[in-house]
Length: 399
Length: 157
Image (tube, rainbow over all chains, first blue to last red; front, side, top):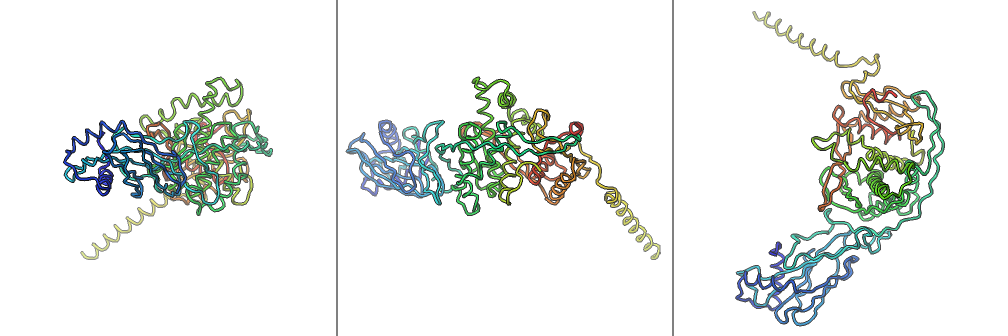
């Protein structure tokens, strides 16, 4: 229950003192016990849970100890604060303007309680507090469709409250840094892209035979072709591509999200959520089952072709997982290509990433996995297709 | 006494120079002999992408093989058509000029308590593990050919 944020507590208490809270003679332990007993009774709310930049975050506190308290609400970011305001005699409310980020972030709203009797320079732990999280979505620059967002899989983001009587945040979070969490987008799945039949092409193999290369548009390879073709037909992606170096991180993220939506539409899956995250130096991205995290500071994301290639790689893993889930639910027709792929991928995903890395990583074993072959092939094909299209068209697949 | 010492130094210097020259001559391949034979176990197998039952487990039509010589240099071993050979060789030449090639790999990771898979990137130099895969990705980025890395026996089909 002990606060881990002495500085914030001090600020809160200093504010309470400035607001007229007289220094008291109550010892630190006694105050701590007193607050510990009282805090579970505190009822307060922060709304909305997701807010646009510069919009107000409203904080309401219902009374629980008339006449004894001074409250202060802090936005633990840029040291912006409200109050102090009296919160002991009646229901009180205040509001803070959400900061303007260049990308979505999470901010912490802290509610501090200070006892008029408790303030003492000799005893620092006279204030106790609670906190909630609020998601802030930046105002879009240059169009886009980032409306209020929610996660269809896990429900909308919720303001979370730490255990009563504790502050969790150690430092301001969210503003422009790479460690803030991303707000998952509301899926806006565009209509499935047409699945074009590949132009037949005659290719002579090393065995001396000539093969006609075309491909079934319903196959895995055919869907990948349709996905690649649909990427640059999308207005949002085309616009983002037009001037990638000058696009903001948020605008680049919108491009990646749109690509994930198109992938989902073509492959018939749920939309993998895409977000930014600061990652280790060598790490470009991370896939955690239904979310794809990318680190925009990495080299690969300075190039739109490579960025979308990586997104495609991870989106392919997402497709693999959902296809295996369909297989296990008995929703795939035996004998179909998808049924065969799901059987192959399902067996691999069960032991994925463990066998080849148990002692020392065996790269060949990693790449030999069917799940990786297909993900690499899809991602590299997307990069190649986009690069060739940007260079002025030409065949996107094969020599 | 002085002249014999000078002679001794000259002889030793000449011997050192001859030794270096012999070593250099042994190391440097004769351009008239063509590319050195592949010396490593790995072979980069290249395909034109295609889906069809006739292709078995292959991802497409097998059109070229690339091996590696003793120094780790990539060598085009064979190709089905001159145009494919030209494009692959151009990609290999370009790769040869790169100090290292990026190699992607994925490892288990945990984020906020949730298990996941992290994708990492690291540069690899020729002659080091993973280089054949990185080269495959590079060749693909230049030619569009799919690739697999296989031991020579597996590349013979």
